[in-house]
Amino acid sequence: MKIFFPRLFLIALSLLLAACSSTGPDKTTDWPPGKLYEEAKLELNTGNYQTALELYQKLSSRYPFGKYAKQGALDTAYAHWKNGDAGLALASLNQYNKLYPNQLGSDYALYLKGLINFNENKTLFSSFTGEDMAERDAEAGRLAFAAFKTLVEKYPSSAYVTDANRRMKFLRNVLGENEVHVARFYLRRNAFIAALNRCKVILSQYQGTPATEEALAIMFASYNAINLKTLADDTKRILEMNFPDSYYLVFAYDPSLRGGLPKSANRKTSTTWTDFNIFDALKNILPDGLITN
View: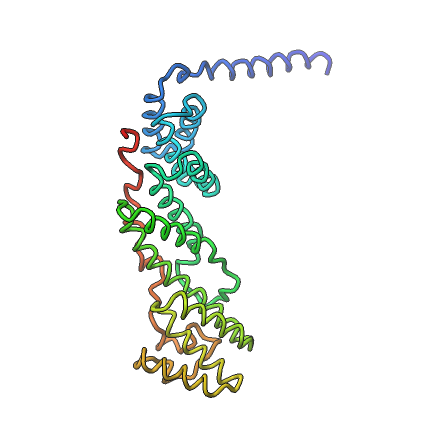
């Protein structure tokens, strides 16, 4: 061992020095902010997100002020998201809002925040499989809705409002369905008051969504179960008035079944990923022209 150790040590040292020398000096050291930004944007547009992030980091640390830093901050959030790190993307957006509150680009920051949360839990939106939704987390959907709503209210002329409104409509359907799945979960376990409370949330917050019909059916079943016949009859009349062709007026509600109905009678929920066709709406979402202002 004494004979070979020095030789092995020299070999290891030479490999380490070779690796260091191969890295070489940082070619970006003297780059002005415009060049740093353009190179970062080029890497971003070609899908080299990690390289883009490294360049944006250099831009931020060397030139923390000015138009390139502002645009770079938004691009950094987008790059983190596309690189698979939604947490860092949202943190970057929060930092942007602190540095540039209510300035040009704030509408995009809200839009991107909504998009990130919108996509955070695709399993929630992909399809409802009849599983207990009490075990699913709809928080990302609620956060997305809140971001889009703030965007629409604060920046009604923004280029992102049309798509934000479209996503909000879809999210209302999804969140309403989430509530009705939880209500069905409670009804299945004879937790009638809890089921009624969930349905009241649907009627107050998600009225007009497809979930409304089933919510009324669950309320009717729950009131009957606890012998509140007057309230049950009132609920049935509301169901008849608003959904005269409802299968819930034909079949007894069965909480063990998806939708409470036989498969042949299930209503359309309009809450699947395919229904929304999200991918068409995700093209060209980077804000153009921000650095020229």
